[in-house]
Image (cartoon, rainbow, N blue to C red):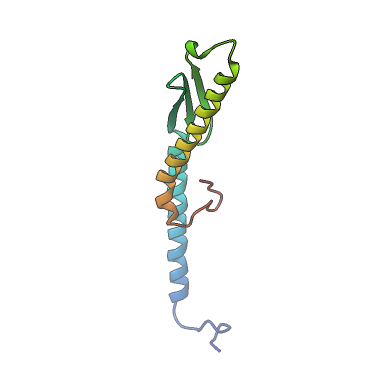
Length: 120
């Protein structure tokens, strides 16, 4: 067995490699934080009902606005308006997911899922 419990006693090779890994991990964390900030400042616009409903959502999943064309408001068919709002919201969520994948995907290096508290 080596001098230090089986890890050998020579040089700083292991420590040097660990420092390199730590620097790489810190850079990756910084890159991911920067990407998250970029996403928080990015908005997507989704429409439904042939443009009668417009949903604006930030890529950190915060609803910014809902615009409803007055022609979409039919007091006798509120259900259709509700359906268009749901469709617009779901489309906005899909666009957010696509933008998050575009920005964060290359940083994850194919790791998938969340990474160290970075859900995407």
